[in-house]
Length: 154
Image (cartoon, rainbow, N blue to C red; front, top):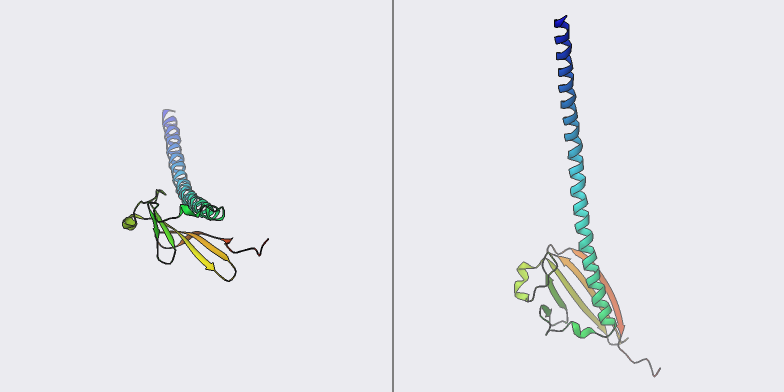
């Protein structure tokens, strides 16, 4: 009688161990997919934050120009690099902190540039604000226009 109970108890222990191994195996397989999903979510969130900051920067600069406050983008402003062709560049770190000197371009992760294209015949000036990353890929670009000519006495 005791022999049957011992065999029965041993069978239950084996089944419990087998169930535990299967449960751990299933948990491991499912956790691999969940970790991968989490990593993709983090990557998408970083890209969304990057796009959001870049679009706000471009929109703000174009709106400043359209409102007549273009003096914000002058050479006297620290960190603003005005080139001979009128293109303005501003460098930022990976945390979107503005670099104060153009000499620290090696530390730059993002580059904001503002191009100006004047058409004297029509009196329209087109501005293009662009944010690129360290690899040179455009994150966001926006174009705005202002009219600088005479409205013919109106």
